Amino acid sequence: MLMKNKFNLIFKKRRHWFSVDYDCYTKYPNHEYARLASKLRLMSPNECVGLIESINDADNGLYYEEVFLLDADSASDDDEIHISPPNIIIDKTITISFFDMKMLLHEWIDFRVK
Image (cartoon, rainbow, N blue to C red; front, side):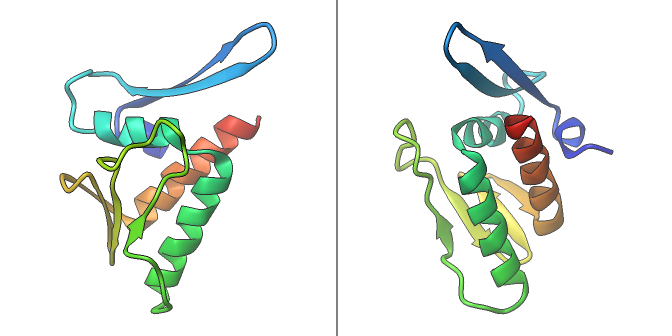
């Protein structure tokens, strides 16, 4: 099963004259995973790789930053991704296992680079 389906997420690519926008949203606007969709929307493929590396470090007992900060200009202080082994916690409300989050990040990366 694809993680985007498990979390009721839709990935959409919008082409413009000279650019492409990548969107992620939930099938149900008031769904709890809308926060997850908003985080993915802000994340570049490089940020996804960085979060995967941090998750791997935490999972292997190595040093990691407890809070993963997004680089996007549109990210705010309210955009929190906490690494709390064996889970990721989004905005203090959504808990996702390391495995599921890594699989979802890989799906987002694949979508963005294809």
